[in-house]
Image 1 (tube, rainbow, N blue to C red):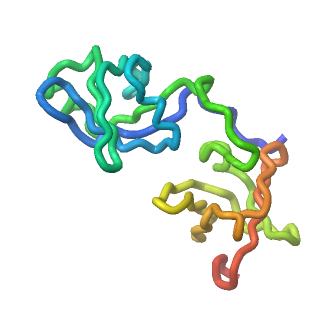
Image 2: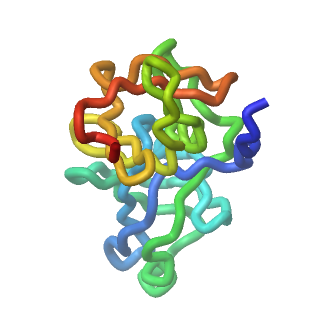
Length: 167
C-alpha cells in the first residue's frame, strides 16, 4: 500500500479560457491527449455541472465548443478559468508505457540505486513532452530520464543528470 489517495471521481481535461461568440460558446485549453472527449453529443462537466456539446471547432491549441445548456455570452464570461472534467470511469485504455498524469503525482522518485530523490508533486504538459516536478527539480518525462514506473509500489525510477537534484 503506497498511501496514495484514491482515484478522483472526475478527471480534469481542460479549462475554460474565455467566451467565444455571442451564443454562449467557450474557448477551452485542453489538458488531455484524448481530444475525442470533446466530440459533439458528449457530456462534459464545467465546474462540476454537466453540459452537452452541440458544436465543436478546433483553433490552434484550443477547442471551441457550444453547449445545449450555455446559450448567452454573459453566462459564458462567468465561466472563465472554470475546470472542465469528465467522470474518471470514462478514461480510455492506455498503451503499456503510457500513464495518466494524476497517477504519477505522489509517486516516490528514486534513482537506479534506490536513493530517494523526492516525490512527484506535479506534472506539466509541454509541446514536446510532459515534465515531472520532483522537489525543485523538473524532470522531462522521457525514457532517457524515467526508467520505470511502478504504480502498485508507488515508485518511479529516475536517472538524473549531474545537478538535476540538489546534492
